[in-house]
Amino acid sequence: INYAQQFISANLQYLFINDNESLSMGNIDFTLCTWVRFDTLENQAIIGKWNTATSNREYLISYDANQFKFYGSFTGAEYVEADSGSSVSASTWHFIAAWHDSKLDTINITVDNGLSASAAFSPNGIYDGTAKFSIGETANVWFLNGQVDGVGIWKKKLPADELSFLYNSGSGRDYPFLNPQLSISTDFPNITSVGKYLKNYTLNRWRSSDLDRVSPGTLSLVLDNQNGLFLPLNTSSSL
Image (cartoon, rainbow, N blue to C red):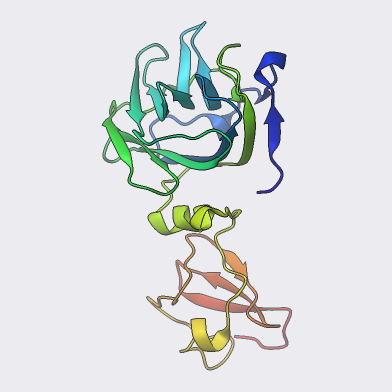
């Protein structure tokens, strides 16, 4: 966040990285997130792996037909789109999250942390092709005119609270999903000493799906949500 890349469509500017395993999806849960601010409103590609020239479509977030859309292809040629239906303004930052749900067989999109729009998708999942991952174009067309920031890709379906964390009421926030303003007394009221095992413990204002570090005051802790275990870091305490 706050390191946006400016694109000028007339100059055919875009960023890309060649196809690799980390960017290929198949039939799995995955989520794409990005911030975008358009200087002008016309059909524009934002992020994705989508080459129409060679029938090598995979996934794409775009702006077209006056709304944000999430496209997914299941053969490289055939595709489905989820239309956000939300209004878009130029010179305004918008947060877009799009995901594939491999259990429900849907593709989904939400704008500015609003209601999500869904479309039924193939049970075979996203086509695994060789298209490059691009920011700001697709197949040398639909060049973006504006700025892109905070691009993120997760091979999981982000839950609603993590999307809300990233959106941050429109101010934006970066991964990892943690709140640096934690306090022992407020957020961890049941902890009496470092190294407690806490099963099924719900924090008041924060959760994490992964192994994350929090720093309440001067005490550094690691929270393992799967095991409910707090481990001390850089302290003389031990379990």
